[in-house]
Length: 98
Image (spheres, rainbow, N blue to C red):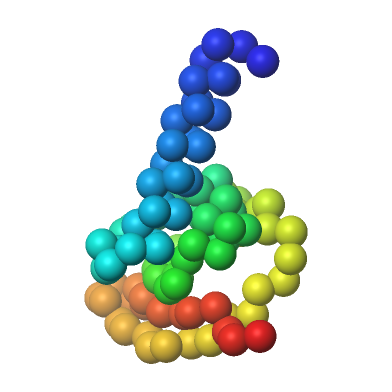
């Protein structure tokens, strides 16, 4: 593994550690995550309480999947929806109770 990859992995592990600490203290009220890699890692660790997904009415033909490396199925419960203009919609979900 190159030095650049080792540093990236080290930084990623620091972010995961910080998120774990935030989630397990009263400091965590709202933290946004946008990277598919972080979403997958935080989902696998059970660190996401709410997913907020924006749907933009544009057909691209390809794109970056948000949940590419999720190993296990995670059922989601819809909390609310919100139209935000130009046809876009925000969808709010939480992980369903098992």
